[in-house]
Image 1 (spheres, one colour):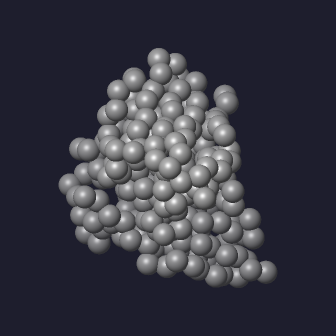
Image 2 (cartoon, chains in turn green, orange):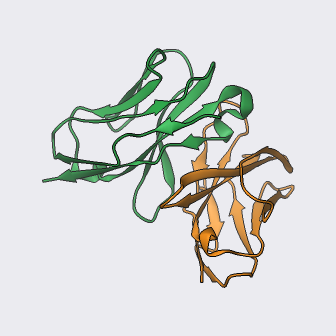
Image 3 (cartoon, chains in turn yellow, orange):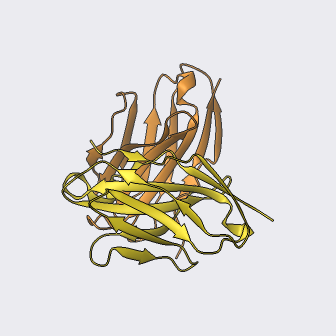
Length: 116
Length: 113
């Protein structure tokens, strides 16, 4: 079974500083990878996804993630964070052979707290 | 296009009771997945329904069940509630394709006393 590890439960960072949220997944032949963001008292919103092709994927609000197959990682980065980025971030993986994007295994989440 | 809606948003039940949660997917979406979110266990996949059939299932006891109607709306039922069932239950809809993207609803907060 798939598993996802998010090593950092909380990441404090000052506004305009860069940030990296780490995500590692258990090895599989074919996987899809996702980052979701959850604001307080809300559901999850898809931030970005890797399905195939270029290993670097970007979101519309400046986040990017790089799929590294050899290290089984999908770390999320942003060069300059804003106070509005404060939220919980979840890394998720799906096994293409057993459900694809419709059956997600999530990490435990990383709380990003941006301070002034 | 309207998003995923879940009703009710908040629910308080007593141990031993049963509960039914409802999810209306985005128009045109045929897949509905359910997830349980708790502070201790995080986000866990319950099951997925596609065209009225359960297509994927997580590792939850039989007390957790679901169904999907011909209009793709889905319900989730939990029988004989336990304190540990207190959680945020999230519903997600998608087109159902393997590479499909899931859109989540705001969730139903269930509290079992």
